[in-house]
Image 1 (cartoon, rainbow, N blue to C red):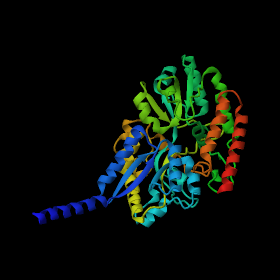
Image 2 (cartoon, rainbow, N blue to C red; image 1 turned 135 degrees about the horizontal axis):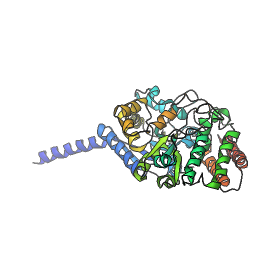
Image 3 (spheres, rainbow, N blue to C red; image 1 turned 120 degrees about the horizontal axis):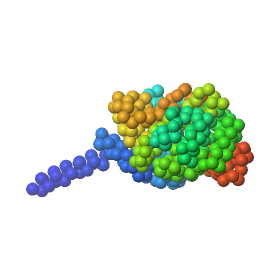
Image 4 (cartoon, rainbow, N blue to C red; image 1 turned 60 degrees about the vertical axis):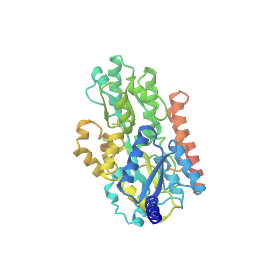
Amino acid sequence: MMKRIGAIAAAAMVFAGTAQAAAEIEWWHAMGGKLGEKVEEIAQKFNASQDQFSVKPVYKGNYTETMTAAIAAFRAGEQPHVVQVFEVGTASMMAAKGAVYPVHELMADAGEAFDQAAYLPAVISYYTTPDGKLLSLPFNSSTPVLWYNKDLLDKAGVAEVPSTWGGIYHAAGKLQEAGHKCAVSFGWQSWVMIENMSAWHDLPIGTKANGFEGTDTEFTFNNPTITGLLQRLRDSMADGTFKYGGRRGESLPLFTTGECAMWMNSSAYYASIKDQAEFAFGQAMLPYSAAVVDKPQNSIIGGATLWVLRGHESEEYKGVAKFFKFMSSAEIQADWHQSTGYVPITTAAYELSKEQGYYAENQGTDTAIKQLSLNEPTANSKGLRFGNFVQIRDVINEEMEAIWAGQKDAKTALDDAKRRGDELLRKFERTN
């Protein structure tokens, strides 16, 4: 009897040893609510697909809070393996020498097959070294699009969704003739109206290829095109054509309640709009100024990528590499894209969504990927890489709000934003 108990105990120890053999991979993220549930689902699928590694997602607050927590944890030697960082934190992460394990190195060291050409150029170009090597893995990537209320445009007799800024104001006139005041609003105003409008018109946001070629860069967004767009919007507030609703996504209700007929913000609002809007809606490409360019260039992405932090066992990084490969599969990416409105990060996921009939059943949901892929990215439309850009976006927001409040004209506000932004760039340059 004692021998039998001993055998059972030994078997239990072996079983326990097997269970504990799964190395834990900690992933800090900033996805709350439904997005957080989707993150948990992806991790569970990976964990169920093999028994060597177990990915543990941990929600750490919004983007800024998650990045700040990861920096503090690294200093304390308690960093996660993977942390989600929004796009404007890219330069700061790159400057954290010794802390970051570049994705191209990780995959090579782990012996995982990794074809960088499988990823969309407009998505990965934001996160590569000057010689094109991938630093972090794109995860939730989106781009701003023009959301429109089809019912309101039809009622006003607007036959075509505007593709130019001239068309936006023409539609505004028709809407007001039909008794509807607000034509347009937007959210994430620095991203949409400064960063993307610059790329869309193939204009630089700053020198040194938007910061990609050095930290000794200066801003140039206070140019006539951007200044003119903002001043015209400010002037149109008098008759209610444009209405400002907040720095990030706070202006969503202006669109979903039908108060404003058009809204420019992330393609990732698809799920929210589908859930809230009680009218026919669609998404189209951003408007461009026909007086500046004959056709638009390409938009740039927003969202976040997954950065790998050093300081863990090499065996655990093999798990990270396997997880990244799993995350990049067409099936996972197509499901993530269709559930959230974020763009698929690979061509294969886009093709799979087409094969599955997703775009045919959900008209316009491929607008973001078409817009990002409209042309091969230029130095002006590849993205941006400015140090301290999290703080600089706050500066830009303050100055743009001074325009909407009537405290400054657009030229004065953008000149001030450039001056204050350049001061923060010099501060970053001195310390890196």
